[in-house]
Length: 359
Image (tube, rainbow, N blue to C red; front, side):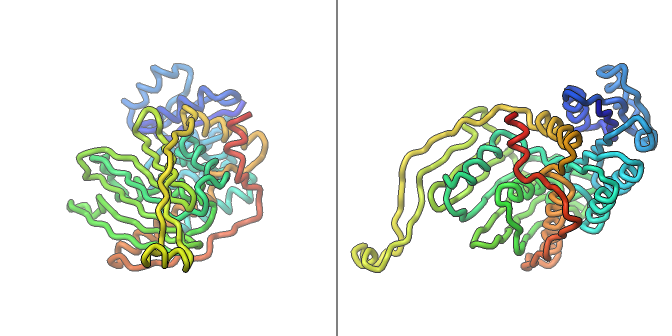
């Protein structure tokens, strides 16, 4: 039985606690939060779980195997480092850390001590993202052209990070998982409308090798909530609307094809032809992503396998976030991305998410 301690029980913590507590082979044994009123809510749901306001009780407890860190990003590094130094695996809320150097230090520390890191990139475990991955790997879409995402709503404003660090990690981690390739450069613009200096809307462009481009629109000041992604390919294109109850993914047999010289002459100089076919909505598994993620992490620990969304995956997202903020500070300048950190050779299980969820 893997015993879990949770630090942070405010907004997302209750979901983390519930899903880990319901995972076979795991049990939540301790919950920490600085707010005593929050702990009282936890005590009503889990009367047999120890609660405390001092998280060091969890970090140093010899009975705890995993520490789930569900706190603001500014506290991630010191909490995660102490947990690793005390021999604990860590499950950590996104984004992984507040800078690249912190992420690299935690990865190296976990490698040396034989411990697992999982970054809570929850969307990787949704039925929609897994289906999109299946379509891409099955060459249904063909060569990819673009990824276009709108992730906007009114709030929730964060105290310690801007809208990029709050919302963009979702799409950046999804792109990292779907494309399985490293971006070459980013450029971004954003603006802060309030005196805290934190951007509340931003427009981000990410360039990938192979003529693939991604555009992200993240916004805390929208009167409506939209979660829509378009992915264009050579063969087919798809629209993913995460807010609808059914037909979350629609695949369109639409596209543009280049013409050879003879065809251009016959088409009075047109360089392309348009294809418009059927639309179909593939079946998407209805799953609670966090439940799948929790079970997957327990399996990775038991099987001694690095999860897909491990510290290195978290580092790739943090590296992009840093570059995006740098571009905004430079007025939207193009910022090349450095060579990804290779780390110590290990056993990252690139295909193990889907395998673990289908067994």
